[in-house]
Length: 399
Image 1 (cartoon, rainbow, N blue to C red):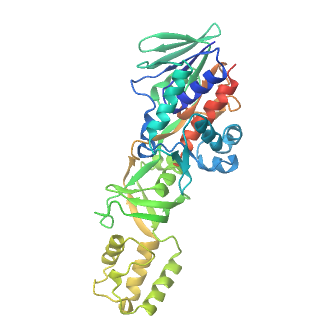
Image 2: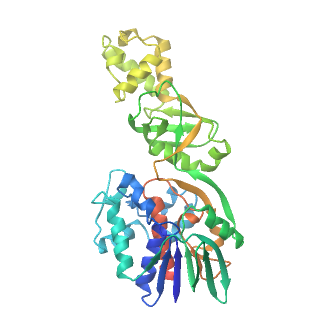
């Protein structure tokens, strides 16, 4: 039995390894379009590889997938995050969970995961052929004919795991498969605003951020960057609003609550501090544990003098400060890719595959895994987990 896996990334390698291990008589080959393997694994988590997430209940996991969602419940029941941890541990890769439940190899190096996968392909005699860009797929005589820019391959079963590849989607569309429209997900917000100038690197543990005139709202850590706002709160918002923000051509306004409590509570907290510390200069005592440089910028923006003590804060100043801290309005004028960890929303519609096997409903012996499908997740190891789970299910189904 010849099995060809198209795509030398996370989904492709994991699927190929598990197929070869469970079916020793199969001849398994990976075709990769470039001369580089496992590139997203390499750059994930800043080179540390956020391999999965500590959350393991399927009912909890599905909420982290804006595209996929509850349809993935049965998939995660068969292979969830704890199964990934066990799989890696059995192959000598120890993992650790961080406070936010992201999981990494204990080495804090993506090379550990890459080495594990490469070692497994060698152990299982999986053939890897690079620089083979897919150009066409044809079903012929109960086999698949795979055309690349260089060669033609024959296989009994094919797994397409090329990631977000326009060329692959074009090939699959030519087979009649429906493709959900493609838009970026997981991106940061470009903002040019004097309030943020020269504050790059300042972070907040818990903010609330809302897109004006929508129901889109998220909370979590926030980071000020050279180009605007980033961090988990923004990335989650970009994923959930991927299609709506694309329609707006990435021109919209956000309201940022930097302190995470209601405006009335912010005002009361300031008043209480005024009464308890009337002579202290406002600029010298950041409230709400805010970063000092950010607090100073807000004080200046609210036209509060550096010499003003709390007791002399006018009602106008207090109201302005409350507004800036709990309902700061910022204009977003574009997006930027989050490091190298780009993700695409859209892909082959899940209605085209049987999620019990990940086999194409229209074409027997054609399987799809990873980002080529209309599945994408928030940051935290969830996108990789979708690859691992799909690869495992395929390896159990191919026979």
